[in-house]
Length: 226
Image 1 (cartoon, rainbow, N blue to C red):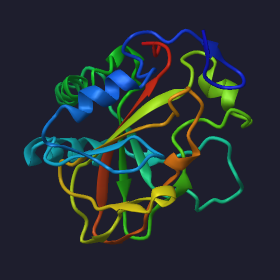
Image 2: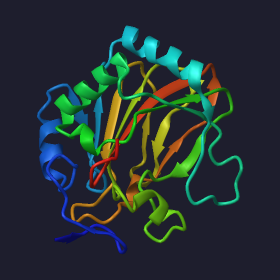
Image 3: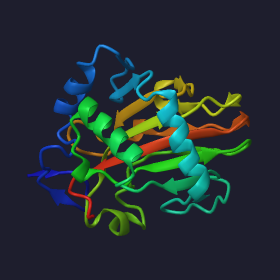
Image 4: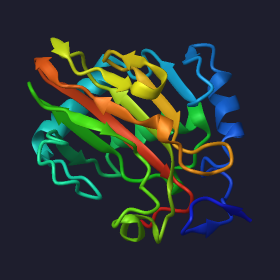
């Protein structure tokens, strides 16, 4: 039995993303993958993971069903996250295709995956520095983690290239990732021992021209209820 956080004790199942070594080895085995050289974060990039046509179809779905984005553990800053979000249905053929490609790359089992989300950032919108894991001592921890546990891996894919801005900055490792159509970014939200990793703090920087679209898939320690 491993302790994943101060509050939740679990026996992670195969395909959950923890322990992380099998996922890291599988992603790194893809010759088209670039691992960001840092001992602090297991962070990977894969250009042209999705083709432009598939990206464009998903952009259309996001535009049709977007809503204001929300945050957990509200910090009083109404401008902390100003994007819009779209919950993409599991049974949509394009979503199923992306899920299958993510599984092929990472080995992560979709049974542990949250519903895929799309995010839309217009000019001036951003998501200030944040982590994707839920803060173990945060007021919303039990609300979000009591059933499926902590987030293990994040897989994010840029669907387009805005005119300017919209990069993703990992401050702790001094890495700025520029949006490119179809580019995948994947990282482990946990340290090797299962504790949350503060070095995964990242900032969805302001879009200065055009609109930015991404999709995000988060994986958990335990099965996500369907």
